[in-house]
Image (tube, rainbow, N blue to C red; front, top):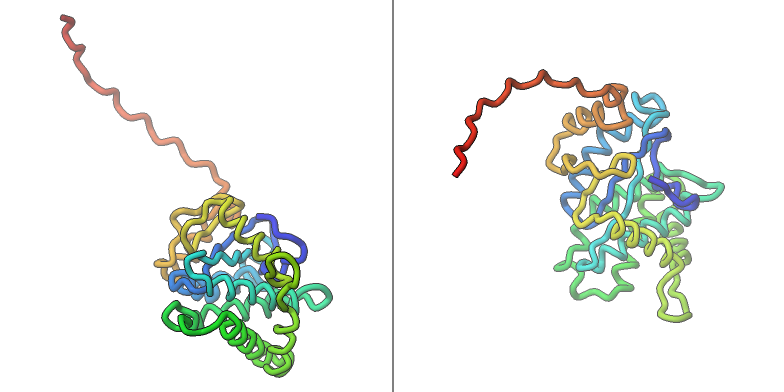
Length: 241
């Protein structure tokens, strides 16, 4: 439920109830779920929505270790947030736009698409996509945005390398493992997994679930009614030997 202060750009909406989405950015099921959530839930937690002030949506990048390029995508998504969406320029909506764009273009980073590319080539393409997101939002040109992305994520020259985003990437990796998230998408409400939530849900099903998810609606706080007692079981004692 908690989110470090410098990663608050991963949160949309505000309120006491946290609905977390663990997403792998090159997972087709995660993409399908994000499309539905983006269409029907996100508008409801923003100003004017039914759940504004009640529910916040928290998005957790959760790459699979067996798709290493997924780690690059997650790292660049966090780098985008650090460069353009945090501090005085805080803008979670802009970050969410980048999340959706990376997710929509995930096929460009599937194994068979990048098997002949170097890591630097993959990272360069991600920086360009990030620049395109900024240009679409009329923030800056895509060339300038891509340049800032490269400057945000240089390789470290100490120990075993990595980029300045290595600790943020580790945070999400550790969080995912600690919470036993072994497949994506995984949804949690106030820290408890919602095992019924699935990428196969249609958009109206997500809204229906939100009506009853703990903390999202007053209906969820009504104690269940005790069913009537069943009739006594008729049984015959077994004869003793």
